[in-house]
Length: 158
Length: 332
Image (cartoon, rainbow over all chains, first blue to last red; front, top):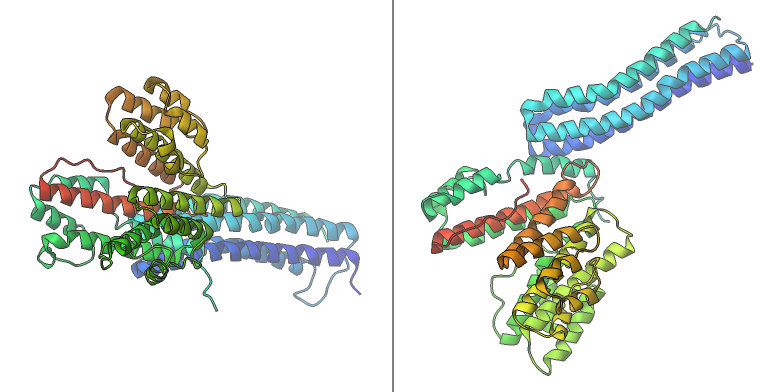
């Protein structure tokens, strides 16, 4: 039977992957609907629209990365699951939260900025780059969340 | 099974492509500066307006139909893609009200319905024709149904086209107010119609004063859904012109009405009131032009197309008759 500590570490990994993934899914969904509207009238914009639609997808990847490091560290991948203390488990649980919460909200808001960028691309295709830069500003906070989650996960001595 | 309504994101994606095809103020100015009708038409078609049409394909007399057809297509497109058909429909009610008035007048005069009927309103044209011909208004919203029954009973005694036209305008605003109240709507849509009603009432006061009408003749012309109470407008009939602006300076947009009236009082120029009203209404739409999750850009596009059609009709009317023209406030 798994210890409470190990279970908490699993919970941290699950939150990191799922919440960041939900944020990305919503963000990509918002941008995708905007993109479909533009492409239905102007299919030539597909290339630019695709870049903007894909941007909110990164939060899901960051969440997956942190979840993967957590499960790797506790030995799930090689089949030897470690017996963690409650404090070690709690530490890994909290380590997963920054990218879980940061990824959830930044994914949604980045989706909205990307949708606005897609409208910009429809009206003034030559300014698409600026739309991408504005969307990337939101990405900063997902990267910061990833960074702190990564440092925290690596800081837990097992 | 009904189709789900498109999302705001999808609708705005399509609108942002359509909006590129709207004529800009600079393009309209260039068309208005053309030497004659033919040159103006060539300049218009050069912009891509109406698709791949050449000037030779349009007769001088057909330009109004052509502009109307383009506007009807825009109205239909907006109605099809809006995520909120009920609120969007409020902006199309003017079309229905125009059609009801036209059908009623045609019936009274015993003539065939002229081709000035406009498609693209909320109610299907065939349904309106049936309603007017059978005098059965059960399929219309309460505000219209009650008003039309009253008009029908008034018509037994006498016919006053001005009065029934005003009654139908009031019915339209009453219906708008009913919808906005039922939905507890607080967005720009309420602001738009509130300002519209108040400004229109202020214009009715000025017009009634110029015609030396008594206050009770003004009363049926006053629209509901405004911020300013109707008794203020009735009192305004007796207010000295230099104090009229201050008297109507009430509510969030009272200042705009007040400034327009003061401008009128200083110049005696009546059309300035209509111009300032159109500017103020367009100002509300422009304030929500960049919203990403509201009807603002969608309604803005629709009303922008209406303003564009109006500007084109003014330009081509002026080119035909040689009158001096003044372009309305534009959205693009």
